[in-house]
Picture 1: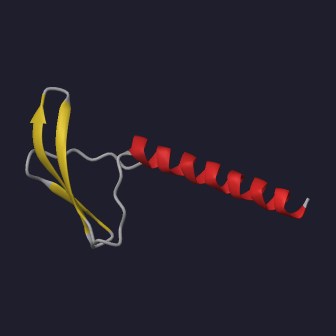
Picture 2 (picture 1 turned 135 degrees about the horizontal axis):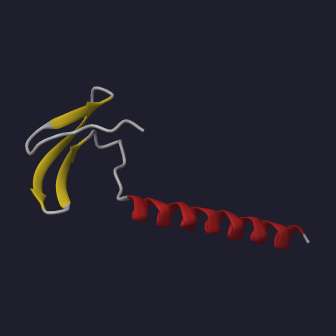
Length: 71
């Protein structure tokens, strides 16, 4: 993991097309802005993990449906 220090209104650039800017700092929270192409999905980690779990469940359900179809 790369750890960087940034101040308010400073940014980092990833892969020439994603920019992450520190918008505000209040106590132990920071507000960031993310500029990325539309085709690049950006999720909060807890949402991303929920999507991954739902995808796994859907794959298992489809697998069970196929097994039942051929049994």
